[in-house]
Image (tube, rainbow, N blue to C red; front, side, top):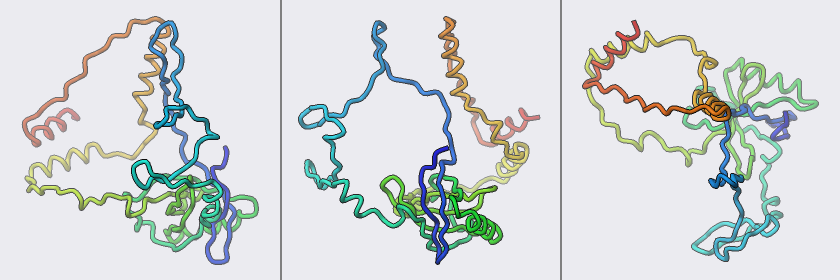
Length: 255
């Protein structure tokens, strides 16, 4: 597995050489865009072109720029970008340690595994052990893909997990939404509580399957073998007049 980033975690005079890896490998069937002409069926691609002159341009003719007004840009050269790269481009500088419970779920963005690089094993294991003992996470900054991210580092099983966090300015807080409060009936609360109890069990994520991808795979195999595919009409959702009836019927069906 190839590391996405190499650098170090730094706090005080402690420096830990580390590597960063993606925590996920997304799966699924990829569909391609092709020409609809049955005699062609070539794959459709995209070309870069100038929207003003209509001319196709190559990578060597492309520059980066910041748009300040309509048809007005400030061109940024690669060497200029390299000069302003922050320290966090190579070092995750820890700013503070906080309780794990202090990080609200709304701020969580993407996860990465951190592993020790050569020479950093002892300090890595020490950090993992003490963070676990104290139920703490380290908060710092890391430059990834032209953006400086806030990151939280904490133990997960046998490794340290790094989670990028949204800046407060990027988050929409629930106070933005007005929810009309309605007084709930005691019968509704009791039935909903009973239903949740009946549906409660230990989390087993491996039991969840990507049904769409599996059905798509079966569809491709069927079409390759020349089968005629029957399109079934969509099932209409049952409509019940009130919430209590819906709860009672659901509980009955589970018996």
